[in-house]
Image (cartoon, rainbow, N blue to C red; front, side, top):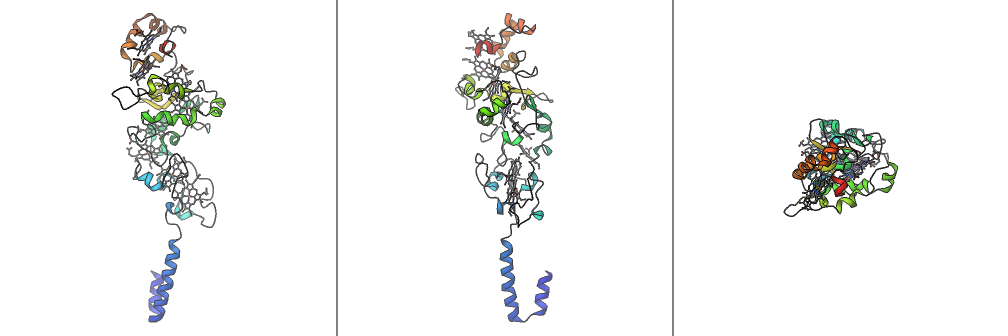
Length: 267
Ligand code: HEC
Ligand code: HEC
Ligand code: HEC
Ligand code: HEC
Ligand code: HEC
Ligand code: HEC
Ligand code: HEC
Ligand code: HEC
């Protein structure tokens, strides 16, 4: 505005035309200066997410968010345009828990380790994705029952990770896919049971959640021997009742560790 005022008062008609042309030149040069994150970041580099940031975000539960709602540390006003590292250093990870407090409070452990103590432990986005996050009820969601196996698979088929962490079972994916639970029963469009149906612990609010997956060696785990019959019994009510009434259930209840539980007979 200031500059326009000076131009108007000081120059002749011809000079104004020249000045306007120069001004337009400046304006178009300015347009090349990035004004939005997407001027520099068009496509995600995360191959499995694939696509244009803005389109992914627009089709997600977070369509109302701006880039900087999640990438809080980055500001367009503080970029160093001359540097190959315009953000001036490492960009800190997104803190999903600032908006999703209940989930962050529930998600404190995976296996035997506390969240955040080891780089191999899943972050929120290992399971949910980053720019195309959808509720678990949406078929396209990475945590929809039909897709959850693929999501867990990313780590639970990685032999280095399995060895490093001494994970008790090295091929849960193969076992699951070959099991009655990995297929879709007749008349159903969803798998019989997902990883989370058996491995999810009840959270503080009582509901089962994949945010509490513990090791089978943890007495609180849903797949530890004392809790296993109840876990299977959620879906197999009548077999659970028969089992509880029968001798094996009675022995198991008394704490006999060699009394068979469901998986000793069913694999
Ligand atoms: C001038 C171009 C430019 C603009 C504008 C820009 N970035 Fe970047 N950004 C880069 C470059 C180059 C890198 C890689 C080097 C680095 O880490 O600084 C990067 C890195 C990142 C990373 C880390 C990538 C990784 O793999 O760790 C994130 C996240 C990011 N930018 C988000 C944003 C957001 C959000 C905005 C808007 C507020 C933005 N950027 C604006 C050029 C830009
Ligand atoms: C819902 C939160 C959220 C929003 C909104 C969001 N991002 Fe991200 N973004 C993430 C997460 C999570 C990662 C993975 C790295 C991490 O955990 O920090 C990521 C990674 C990135 C990366 C580096 C890896 C890659 O995919 O190339 C860039 C660049 C990036 N985001 C740019 C953007 C831009 C541009 C926008 C706006 C159009 C945006 N983000 C909006 C959550 C978000
Ligand atoms: C700036 C706040 C904010 C941040 C940061 C954020 N979210 Fe969200 N998230 C929301 C809002 C708002 C909604 C939509 C309202 C709702 O349904 O809860 C939402 C929805 C969701 C949903 C779908 C919930 C549903 O029931 O529809 C999931 C899953 C989710 N977010 C996970 C994440 C993850 C994972 C991250 C980190 C990568 C993240 N969010 C970062 C605010 C945020
Ligand atoms: C980002 C990688 C990653 C993802 C994704 C992941 N896990 Fe894990 N998981 C691990 C690591 C690492 C451990 C070992 C932690 C430890 O040392 O106790 C582990 C441990 C476990 C354990 C306990 C194993 C044991 O022997 O103690 C179970 C059960 C488990 N994960 C199930 C799942 C399920 C189900 C999913 C999907 C909903 C999943 N995981 C997704 C990395 C991952
Ligand atoms: C090991 C995989 C895994 C990790 C890690 C994980 N989630 Fe989830 N999340 C799930 C699954 C599966 C569901 C579906 C319901 C359930 O089992 O709890 C879910 C449900 C949700 C929901 C409810 C909406 C919906 O889609 O049903 C929100 C919000 C959410 N997660 C946010 C987070 C946040 C924030 C973090 C990190 C603090 C996180 N999640 C970490 C697997 C994960
Ligand atoms: C029908 C229930 C059920 C389903 C579905 C299921 N599991 Fe398991 N899983 C178990 C039981 C029970 C054990 C522990 C006892 C055993 O090894 O027989 C176990 C053991 C494991 C272990 C190692 C032992 C530990 O410490 O917990 C991992 C890792 C694992 N499962 C991951 C997965 C993944 C990933 C999926 C989905 C692809 C999955 N499971 C689906 C019931 C199930
Ligand atoms: C989330 C619900 C759910 C959980 C939890 C669950 N199941 Fe199942 N199970 C099913 C469904 C649904 C079927 C039927 C699959 C079909 O028809 O293809 C099934 C089938 C079976 C069958 C075969 C029955 C037949 O008719 O052939 C056995 C055996 C079985 N489950 C045992 C178990 C055991 C043992 C556990 C615990 C480790 C368990 N289930 C946990 C839902 C579940
Ligand atoms: C001592 C071994 C044993 C134990 C322990 C056991 N079962 Fe079974 N179960 C069997 C045998 C044998 C059959 C097949 C014969 C029958 O139908 O009675 C069977 C049948 C089943 C079936 C299929 C019924 C059908 O219609 O074909 C399901 C589902 C099942 N059991 C679930 C469970 C669950 C859940 C538990 C734990 C609460 C459990 N079983 C504990 C041996 C066992």
